[in-house]
Length: 288
Image (cartoon, rainbow, N blue to C red; front, side, top):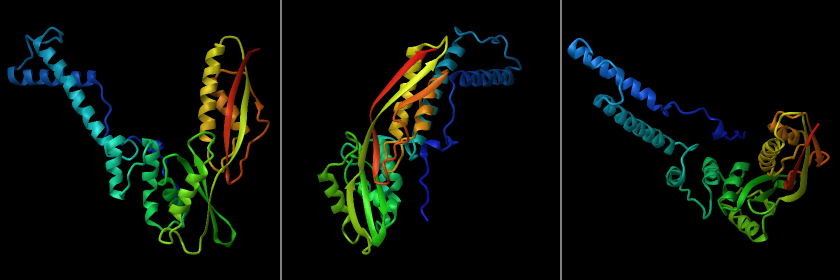
């Protein structure tokens, strides 16, 4: 049974990382200083006011900032050893235990996703995630891999590129096929086929109606940002660009009266071996 991959971005913040506030640290230090003076002298007189010009206060101010920097460095050290937050060289160190190297030009996010799949690499490439891991390890321009199992043990590995509309050139398709072909890497019974995703291109046109008050330019900018994020998330193999999803993304620009999708006229389903690429997003804001 395939286990769903954990969404690292939805993990709760680790307890080892603490929230930092220099004013809190300063107040704690002043309270400790008062307590020490009272314990030693029976009173904190004549020092009983927090005056910024007081040498003791200046000392605690400086040391509060030093403590803040130290605690932040500890937070950064914790983040450096967590897969969800490690970056650059730290992420490469975390990946070394799987004998995994960063591909040329591979971003942290792409490398992180491949590192998360790395345990699947120990399996012969029969499970879908094993095919995904081995194919993603061929070239950093490969954005996504889907393994579609059909009749007669046919396995079609579908590739989506980060470049252009997502179509993968024949040279990279051939490299992936060659990498997955050795019988030491895949089941003998699998009939392997490798191909680029079929790309369905579409433009998106949205009409937004607003009432008195909201700034039209601001509404347009927010709607455009929401739509860009949504269509980017739908640029994946076998993923439909949903009509309702476009409306929801455009409504990120609240307050709006109505959102109308002028194009496309319905859901755009690319099929299990295809992907949708949005060529243009147009947003029209009308005051009613």
